[in-house]
Length: 182
Image (cartoon, rainbow, N blue to C red):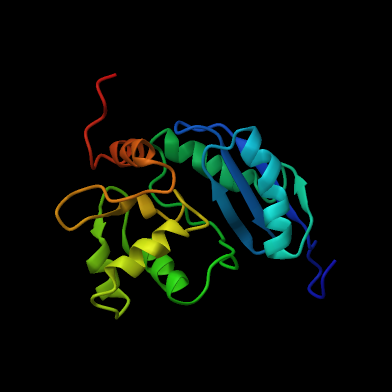
């Protein structure tokens, strides 16, 4: 236990989703990581990466700290949840990136999109659209901190760490793009 009575470990689990398996991790402070495409290679490397970055040994468990995030993600993919409202552990991001991601989490609601440049302006850094793109690429909490809602000013999708098809699927789920026919 740490000085505040919390277990110092990180819990992780791989859960199915409409966009493929996701590896989720949580600390005593909240959800700390969401990783796309959690196949065998991700399952092999991610716990060690989390241990190195967080200084705590990851334990595989979907019943403790991850139970509520898993329920909320299930509800999101079923179309029943529009706001995650979960405790988040921001320790895998800092500085400008954290500022941008916090603004994204609180200021870009379900079913809407924002341009990279507009998000830069919202955090007081007009002209920092490329830096916002870098912040999106380093987002440790995709889907929950909705970097899929950030698009190019000309209407293009822009990039996405989970792949453009995943971004399209998430935006279609939220009604921003039409659902694919097949």
